Length: 228
Image (cartoon, rainbow, N blue to C red; front, side, top):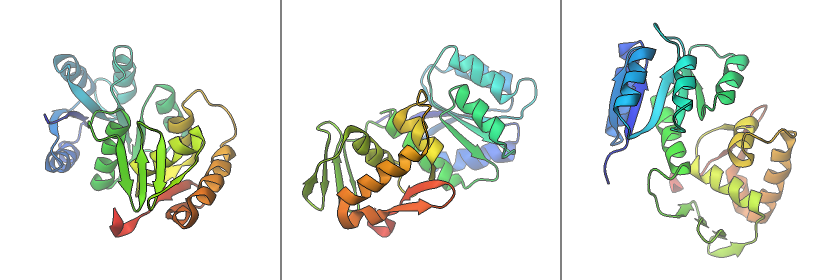
């Protein structure tokens, strides 16, 4: 399979190199830009960009302006990087159609894991339609789930929720992020609906339900350890 192309945009060369090195090791083709204007030049010159890692604070044109411009032409996944852990910034990012929002400093390994999760979700990794994780087998095409070889019956949203957990295994997911990705951005209900669905999902999964860990004050994480 051809390498997927990722555009990394940051005015700090050290940060670009750090991200580039980890992505290159994970078999991605990386192109770079040091400011917003250069980012748009690269975006228009490379029609096969699979994902953009975009810093917020940059000279000439900031990340928000770049994001607006890109979104007027494309739905390419965008991960925003910021040195500010500001809720208002995060809300603005999601309103602009940002797929992920990561505050600096961050773990490059987690960044790569989130990139891969987004690319799986947008079907760009061309992975098989079957997910297998710690005794949980998910057939996405047939919409079927097996736990240690035993089929279990899940509602549509329970199935989507479990698939999202498995695709993002090992990553702590906030309730808001789960709502945005499983219920989509047009859902304006109470985030506690997540808790209700997780409770039902755990119950149907039996002992495997314990793999879905509660991150108090935040959300949930599917943790399988060395059995991944």
